Length: 127
Image 1 (cartoon, rainbow, N blue to C red):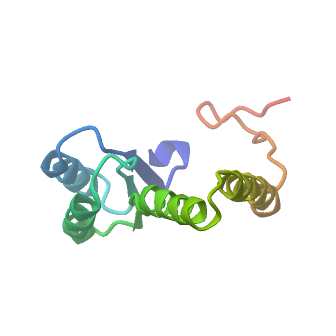
Image 2: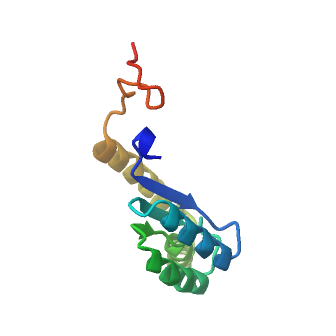
């Protein structure tokens, strides 16, 4: 990992039972004590499971952990919009606006992506 210049690991979880996922994070921390570890359960867990398991994982000094808050908030907001307006159109408008804002934000925050000048694995200069 260090040989390739990486300083962080992002674990895409939500596949194994939460106790096994926690064990994986523990083993990663033991193997890479100086590495930043990020964990995302891919919205596979309930809110309660996310809160409890991610609290346990924080013992292993995670840089950040994602949950499924968006998966809970979005249906509630859409339901309220439909209930108040009697139409799906406002929900589609909100979703479209969020897509546009997300794409624009990505462009402003990340900017232009360029390939590295050197091949990360071999160290050779690219032409």
